[in-house]
Image (cartoon, rainbow, N blue to C red; front, top):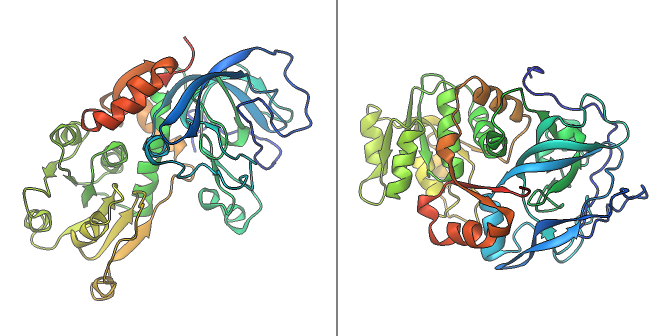
Length: 390
């Protein structure tokens, strides 16, 4: 990690704590001296997100910080909660790490500035512009102690299992912070998280320098994966996408070729572009029952297919197709330290986030011009970012 670009805090290790919409951190620390309230987008159920007046979070506990949010992006997982929730938000029992149950302030793709430091936090100061990894974790399970915090046994995503950043302020563990360099665009800070998802997937594939890569799906994560694959040295990136608007966007962010699997035989097309063999690597970025098999079928023997999409249903598959070809299928969840590299790629110009931003709205418009816009006009949007405070 280059600390001139991104730096994480030195803090005492504590478990994540709940910050409720009513301001309770489930901690015995004293409340903030300010009793003022703030606006926040609170999930209360399917198709029920309300912009409400809630108390500002209390003084951050030891090892945590309070951030004043500048921008926060609407993620596909937020949209899932709106349309079909609860998906990730715990409603039957409190989350084992955070204690959250039921209503939750959404939002985890954000940037802002530090407003207050909890005890024991060093390496950061009030006023520092930062972003934060959303993977709140226990630090004690086997996965955490082996550096795999993104698959922690008690993983809690900010904005889904603990209150998030569709609010003027949010409390988060300081160990998850990354400082933004001078001159770094504030808006770009809200795109670091989805780009980190794409870069983590690319890293899971190993070196792809000079290789032919297929990205299945050109939604937000697919586009981010295209950009990260190019930044990592892929020789050619082929996107599989049916939406005309997203086909154009895939080419804009770096895809060499776009194939529409609805109007052509995508497998045959990819083989024709690769001497009859298939791609070296594929990334499945949709999570549909048919696209996992497609992602495996488009790669050559001994190729790699990385599954990035969130699957809501089981997908049938004959695993002899893997045995007989020695193909590798790899899972990829969220990220594990990739924020630093994404910040560096944006700072040095290898990644331009502007093509990803298709809307900028105020918090008060988050339902009508945010969630409903994405539901009804998903094809023409990539990332709508929200400004909680004016």
